[in-house]
Image 1 (spheres, rainbow over the protein chains, first blue to last red):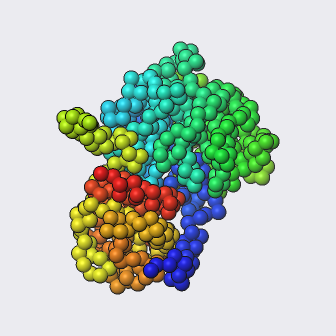
Image 2 (image 1 turned 90 degrees about the horizontal axis):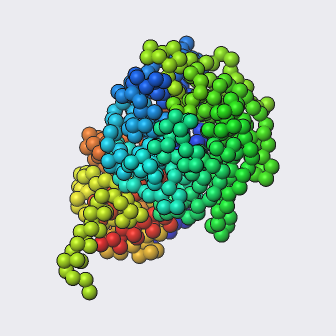
Image 3 (image 1 turned 90 degrees about the vertical axis):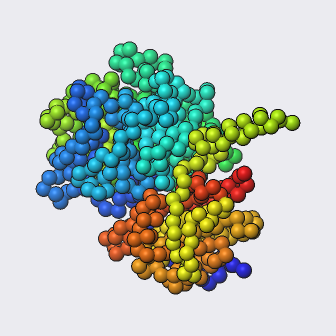
Length: 406
Length: 194
């Protein structure tokens, strides 16, 4: 007979507790897949996924030295050539073990697999997946999201660039596993986020490639989604279709263990919405607050208290206190420069890196940069000394989008 | 009653669907589980191919770990208990495996002592070690790695692999997802697969 509560298992339980204490840092990076190994030290390198601004030179991954003890602090120290141009390099994500970055490209549908562990200062391109539409039947890969030992990718379109969008899974070394279809009545795709402790997944909705590839003036604003889908993650099965504001982008589950709510920024509704699940398993969504114009990115503080929203058209980043979901409060605002877009917050919640390109078809300024805001008890303050100019590179200006830290 | 030809076509269609990775089962076919030949805690040789026909739950740990390994092995012990309660350990249909990431220190004797600490039943749970190079190859073949960390421990990914009766990886868990009820359900699904 085996007794789960025997003395040996009690000893094992003590070891387990010691292990869990080691595993659970008081502070941790947010807005990464929960399956990604977290940094256990301050960041040394900031990776920025960049596209050549005029799409004539190759796209690249920029490495910026952000080690505060380094003589090269705040400088771009390396550019990893991705071997092709015009990809519209966009979002990227770590594998679960944080050894590789998967980079998604919205125009070419290429997926770039980049080794960052071997030499974090000089990442290496190990594989480019050229056959993504053929394998998956999907185009416009958007969010690469780590699952244990594999990657889940959300896509914006079908093989022909229209609808329906979908999701696909790959092994960490780039072998296609399967496609997951969206329901016929909610065919738009954008972001994906998993909450493993309650076995839920959320997906959001933008517009397909044959619309976002057009110049802004020609885009069909009626061809955007307004749904957030809540899934049973283990079953990969949709449980609820929630109507929110037009074009819900990032999906951010509450960081609290067991919490059954999350947030999305609705880009064409100038608002943040919250979705909430109740004890019976029913989900609802409601507008949480109105934001500045075109809320393009949404980030969370490690303590789950604040949301940060970049307002692309009103040139500001807003910090919202959402500790009371009935009474969200705008607590600080900064203007980092024109058209702020992507943000990345450090594990201690004290620094936020910012880029300012959304899409080559939507950017309205040619001045591209990476900047830093410090976050303290009195809100966000821009660092006047940290400014990486992306317009004077050997290959000319580049649009910086998503960021990751190492 | 289905005509034999139609029945054969349906069986073939199901097989093609499963092998092409569509949603034939909620547990996708991720990839073939890599072969290994290692040494058990009793000093015997065990190959993956010896276990064909069984559903496997495979972890990678080392016995001096003070990070995720104790938690992983503790959860595996609860899964072992859950499998027993559901009658899934009868007839050797399910096998738990734990492969060391530190073969130099984790000798068969060390593994036997570690098993006792966690009430691992040797009838259904085998711990594996071997020569350093051979273990390193197995670790790499399974997409795992272990490297010295600053605190003197080994840094390594937290992954536990679920392998079906045909030797294919069907799920990969980490600690966040290694819930007893979920894993037992997944194993039961694979035990019942034709």
